[in-house]
Image 1: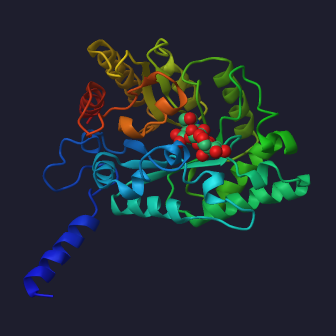
Image 2: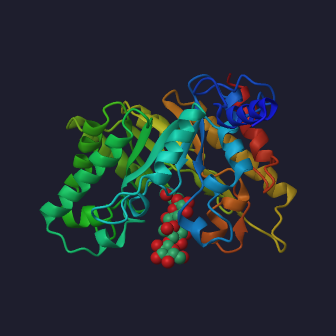
Image 3: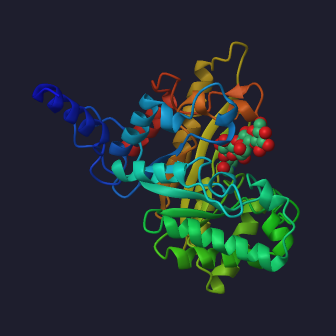
Length: 367
Ligand code: G3I
């Protein structure tokens, strides 16, 4: 190769692999990125996104976003200081057969995060959904099932020890009425509620530095479900179980009012000595024919995003705010809710909606 071309090749390789930022929550040093969310965020506050892949993406007419969409990756690296695998650390992906793990996608995300000076939220270890068939349909004794969960947690949490900031250890374990999911959650159904404490203990043994969370939807407000978490976590902590955080997902809809008591709800969990976080924010809306949101919808959406972020910023233990994807074309919403969508902060060409600007100016106001 000619020297000039070699230099160009090396230059390009370095440009493509160089970390995009210099500290976990600060902006890249290089020009052009000073207007990003992570740059606007106050020190120590993590602004995150889910990393699109797996799940509903596999049924859509595009290749895997994280590995294939280069502009997507650039925005993901430049804008955010935290990343959450959307599906890639769930049981059905990472543990597809009883004796086989598939770490490829999860490893790639953790590597990407390191290159871009991002922290990672691990998602998730004990859940009723997206479990592999071998697990849900297998006929195991109680002892076997317990051993399977312990081995999974030790293996997965242990593999990423020191590289995961927060783990959603237990996800969505209560119904909206505040009852434990004793029918559809295989772990609780077969092993009883005591397995929840065990999961936290095993995760803590495997990575003593990771902060261990309960995570759920419809717990933004003080209600039967969040009350159930409050009571459970209080008991677990009194018993010395290593529970460190409670997080609300933040999947909101313009068809419903804003949960105005979000801040006071987070504060009561902070009062238990817990970290708090908002982990899966998006704001969906019912779209008019043609599928384009109205100006009024966009304004109201921006307001919901801003109020969620403000609630978190107003709680001293809430240092992590993650959106469940940042661009509409990869959002789970239209796949799940017919006639609804436009739930993220960017248009499909990565230009910004009012919601993006609202997040950035709110963050910048707290620097
Ligand atoms: O398992 C079925 C499979 O049997 C079927 O053949 C296939 C074809 O439709 O669908 C498979 O289910 C898919 C599932 O992921 C498992 O891969 C669903 O269609 C697909 O919609 C689903 O999407 C994921 C969803 O979790 C599953 O609950 C989304 O990508 C993901 O964004 C979403 O994320 C969750 C968080 O983890 C927890 N909080 C709520 C949030 C939004 O639902």
